[in-house]
Image (cartoon, rainbow over all chains, first blue to last red; front, side):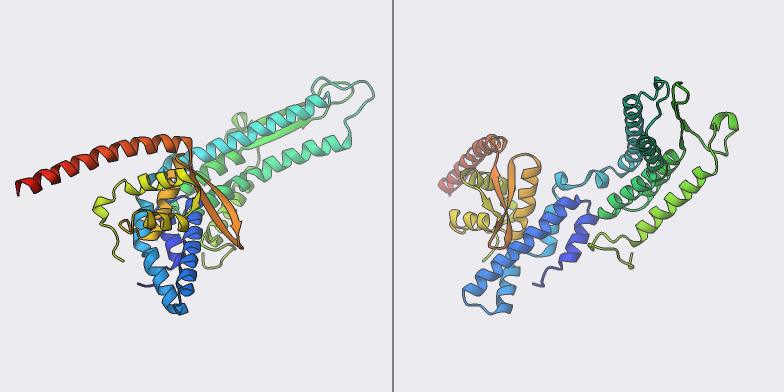
Length: 245
Length: 113
């Protein structure tokens, strides 16, 4: 019986739709079991090679183990079992969740500073509070969507899922996530401040798109390029980036 | 040593694993040894196939696991949960019923010969 090729078994399990956490545990525990069998065989007086062969025989061949794992549907990942639903729903929900978080956090910042009700005469918003709000808006406008897209790529690559549904999901996520724009009106002269949130694209008539501009398209291009590069260079079978794709 | 006939093994690993792990927690290698010794070497599995069974039972809430570092090696210890013990009771009942049924048929056939 030939020795188990762990890397190949890992790949076959992932391609079979097994969730990465179960793949990792299966490989780790089988490896430890193999070492225990080998140690015992050597302890009984066998040579290193004979001990390894006996350990391999007792552990079973890769095909038998693979069949056994694949026969358990409860070990499959959601993304592999329902790729269409997963890669269409997750992007939409993650974009909506990220913007819900932004709105909630801005409301919190604004209400804690008395920003929406108007400030007392002569007082001003502190610089750090303005900077915090601006940074938070900037992060959400320009970094959250690419980060979510990379997250979707990582999920798909770690599960070795065929690219069509993840690609559609990433395009959907990018378009949804890149169309948002915020506008902050700082409180002045005792008046109330405001913030507005818009969604749209500059190819739409101005009345529909509000004040969006070419930056949306820059963000779409950047996000799609980053996602494509990540897909190309992220190798789930290695712990680090690989040029072999 | 010859492996046990696979056609007779459907459902048996689940029953045996739940039974042994209800008594005390064990890691995979220990469990396989306990199956061999406990069955008088009549149940011999390809040892690697016990892990998918353990993971499957755990994901169904019938087992729980805990990682421990023993002599520089990480061991995953498994134990039957309360839900697993309930399932064990059902499986034992089914097993006794089938076992008695098969034994009765075999006795009758032998008597007719």
